[in-house]
Amino acid sequence: MIVHTTHITLLGKLGEDRNPAAWDEFCDRYGELIRSFARRQGLQPSDCDDVLQEVLVALSRSMREFEYDPAKGKFRSYLKTITLRAVFRRFRQERRSGGQGPHGDPAAEPASDASADERWEDEWRQYHLRQAMQTIDTEFSDSDRAAFRLYALSGRGARETAETLGVSVDSVYQAKSRIMARLSAVIETQVRDEG
Image (tube, rainbow, N blue to C red):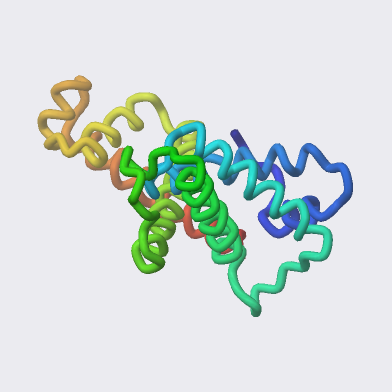
């Protein structure tokens, strides 16, 4: 999906009454981040969907009065706090109902704050990479993307990648270099735009 509004503009639109397009865009941008984080905390897929819904409800309540002020903190920290609360609540609900905790262990607890912070930051980086890869998919040729995926992401050697794709080793190096530069620029823009 190509994002059409800036992060700050989107946050402003979430505060407007009855703006389903803004909420759809928010879910497109952040839904997988929230679900993936909940999974890494040990929740089942259906519980991850519940966490997403709870985060959306909490945000919808707070967004009417929300005014984004980067001096007060980053939106991602605010989103992390809301998401963590939803994950912890889900664990408590499961335990009260006699259900299984993370990884099938009814006594298990969600990760500690330090571990949860580390997991959130890792998910945030992965989120930005996934978003940036969508840009790469629209801007680079199939051949360049295949070379990049095999060489840079899958760890194959440059020569093996070149032979597999029927291109020169130099083409593999160039594809990696151009795509890495573009990924860095796209991610830098995303991070700057999110505030």
